[in-house]
Length: 464
Image (cartoon, rainbow, N blue to C red):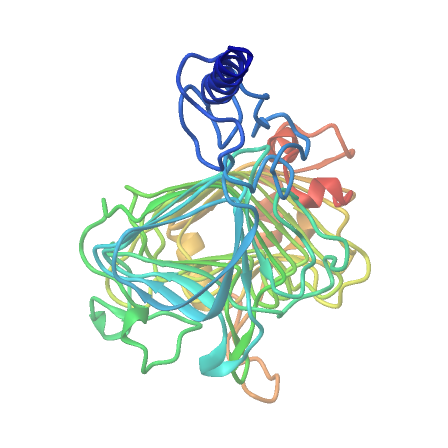
């Protein structure tokens, strides 16, 4: 009888143990140590009636996470390195938990859309010529790169030690340039090209690469959205005297959105417009090697509230060319701040060349050298001024008056004048008094609203 009683007691105890383990007080039959997510668990062996899971948004590394709010079975993957090269023929999304490496030219092909999450970092490998790295949005493709002021999308070099979740690295500055290529967007809008052809190869891409074509007849063409983008340390050399711009816009249509874009330390131009009708706002260029904003081939859009800050090797803040064919169109620059310095060998305000057409107004400039000027380079552009095709609104200059506006003439290879000035009685300089005001720094009424650039790397580094 005692043996029977003992057997019953053992059986009951065993049943209680196994029942307690399988229920674990959660009523769902889940085990908190079986290595799977079951019952009312919200993670593997955690959550519900089991121990709390690690949270993926608490800003600390806990639970089974292998990084801050990432890793383990419950959270998103931690940082990864994803290498990209060649054609992207299908839609893709690049996410902020990864760093993307451009191994040479990465081309978003006709019909495909590249979406880039806020805060994503893209790094270009170093290379020259055909091996130069760049992101190219071909005609018919789209880029949806919508960063935010807190989480800008950053294009930089593989030599930059910036990491996931950061807005800047520590080992490069505004004097480090040419470490990769740049970003090119190519569209189907009109441009004015030599021989009145409708499409041409973009500057910065070798002629043999067919994905470099731009131009067409669709002025409403839509290449996507570029917002809160910082492009740094680019401008790789692809040929003698031919470098990639920070942001190249080839015949981009007005259906495209371009706003809040920063270019830092590019060997060539900051932003260059080759024809097209796209409007752009809140552009900032700092420490470019050549020109800040460059306009070519009858660009017919409007650039508003933008800033150019010259660096130690910068040339012109603005360089403006006109049509190359019979098609004519005019640009508008409205609300632009130009910041010069006393050391750069170039350091001019603006150069108007080859029949430039359009208007610049509400321009505010300071910090330039006494020798800096606003030029009309030859008789062709001077004639456009006389004909009303090239116009100036308010220019406010710190420390200088209308004397900075000068008419020049074409020269031969030896530097000898081959033209005579045609703006006379009064001269271009005298006429410039109509739109030029000498002001004290900070007393301007025109120029850009600098607060729009508080999110930028340039602001964080004290460039303005």
